[in-house]
Image (cartoon, rainbow, N blue to C red; front, side, top):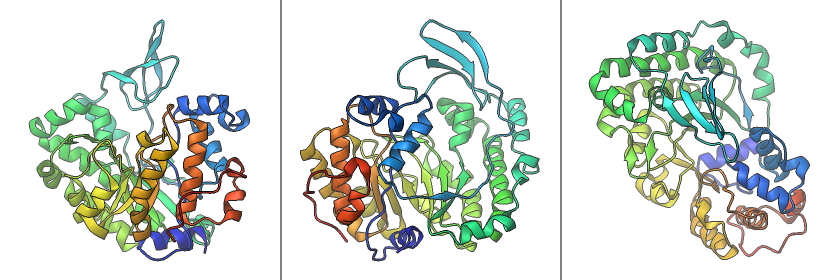
Length: 388
């Protein structure tokens, strides 16, 4: 069974030879710790976090995905500009126009936003100009010429479909988003529709030529008690534009359409499903999106990604407990288990290797497949039995 066949069957709740081995990456603190505890420096070291994560994922034998090229971000991005170089932090303008403060040393995940770039309609006109679908950078690919390398691939093909509200939240700020939808709903609606018009304009030529298995979006508009904007606002201003994008994808055979949203998505997920989006990632357990609860709530209308509670990776007993809890979901299908966000620094290298070995046993990896993964070679005999 190829990776592509396996992915499609898992997403359609069909039997497979083994499960899918993915991850969501690792925080810098974890990677630094693991190098000290035995991860080869040529794998886990370096200055660029993304490069380090990619090497570690490959080292642990993660299953591959191929991304079809699409540019739907702001272009040009705002130029990087240092505002102030302080003793422990640096203040700068980032690529989406915000003025932010970031630590010079230590973990760099979410900089402190001092001032958002989009404050009124005049600012929006600048952003809107950077979302022009006719920008030559968005039309640089000959999809017909690229089609064979994607359509004949034996790995799942994915495409990024941007964001419906999350990017707007980035530009205006979390608190200001709440004011925007009530004080200037027409402006908010224009922003959402501008984004969706761009996605449709750029997706259509790609989808006519390239067979896509997975459409991947991003939101991050929820916290542990629910979303930043409520279901009524979403239904009124976002559901219809979202359904237009999802409808286009589905007409071209793309029926796994996910969004990356941390926090508690339970209030919005039914609306997403009604609009055609059916994939939930990363199913952040402590944030209120436990995959067991989501499956009970949504049934097989949703496919789930992630959901391994990172807080359970601190000792072997809890690792086994967590994987056993999720095993019925894996067996049921429509679910790819991995840590519910980037692996944090309190997870030791030994425990991470233990977790990976036991997860692969649960997924039904053969001894030979595991032995081909260098950091797991010669590791303990697993406790868990295969689901498949």
